[in-house]
Figure 1 (cartoon, rainbow, N blue to C red):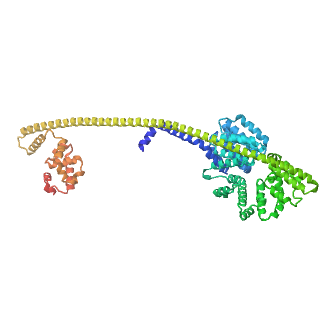
Figure 2: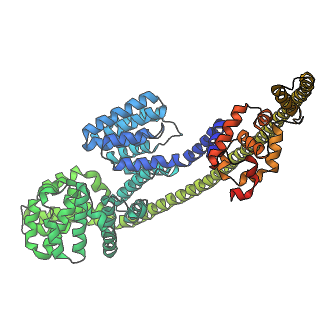
Figure 3: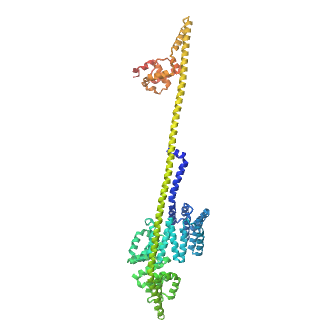
Length: 637
């Protein structure tokens, strides 16, 4: 661990560079998926603070479209969150001061204006955003705004054109959320145009974008079931319902809950489950039904009454005339058999003038649907036939109805052809998607090869630096070891030289002492004419001193320690002694006197006396035991 820390510290800039390259490579792979992840999360998030926190993690060029989409979503129902998020986005766009940010801001304002129904403002924001929108950025929200503007105006052709452009952009940008939006809108338009085959394909394609069906909106599932019911595929609708039963049960928004319930009722009626349909109808009082679902709900209620209480149909229609007048096109399309039943004998239930007024409010829809016009004129014919004075009018409008019916049958073939064309357009879109995904896969492989190449180069450089560092470290250690050995050799040489000089001095002093001692002994012998004992003693001591070997020095004791070291092994108590004490002990055992030992070892006679006393105490012997006796192993035993 210490080695690694040292390596990192010594080559910290290289390590920082390598780590930076790795981070950049990882970021490259993840940056495209960040926007999708955060867009999905933001779509599901309710708290505005959480949305802002996630937008903070997206860089410039990515947060704008995601944020302003959420602003438009908040505008419809959460005014406080709308104001707070809009302020955050406008401030950040102003700080960044990028063309894409400003263009996205215009698109965001346009989406809000579209929600308000201010179409002139929408046109203004479209034009302003178009002026500065860079071609290299995500333009999905821009195409969404234009498509929804044309859809609001009723121009389905232009709306589909821009929805398809947006879809291509979403595929190219790998923007899953926007791809779902465009596919879903295209499916809804196809459904309204009775292009059920194409609508089914678009809706199912949206459904397939959710992993394992997780998170699929109940409204989308309801739309798929509606298409299957309209096409008469009741068993398929039932199977699909059961497959997504948990998701349908968890529907949260009011529209989705009602759509799911109404579809369930209609499916049960087609499958002959009348009792179950009655229970479900009771769960949804008429007063709670949303405006866009009322005719669908009323059709289910009348179908149920047809099975159980057919005589109650006219009264039920009378109770819901406000629904019929509000969506006469839907009523005359879905309720035509029940309206005809209610007119038998009920002269005042529906009036011709009212029907004409209701029709005129939806003139564009009737122009595009001959069957709706045929049903309208059939109703007028029945109303006129109940008035003897208007039998001619009844006959004329019946002729008009038949003409529209014939036109419908002719148009039916064109609808089928249009449905076929729409399905071909869908297949073309899928082909483009597959081609783009294949291209992206190839690009990803190329990027992978490049990343692998760069990574290999970086790794090679790192290993080369590591090798050079290790070699340099080894050489440095080898040099340090050689220098240390040289230093030891120099110290040993200096020590030996000093010891040699010291020994030479000791020998010189010993020879001088011996020479002077013998010289003084001779002089005392000549001077001792009176045979004085003191002089004789002094002379003998001088002779003894003169007899000391000229090689007397501490090495004498050391040599004896080597020769007679086994004596020490017999006395473990003495192992703790220092070298001087061991020298004194071995010389004492060898018969040297205190003064001689002091001269050899280089200490005072008093020190010799103290050491000998200490040794006797440690061994537990008194002065009666001579030192030479320690050589006798029997004493030890």
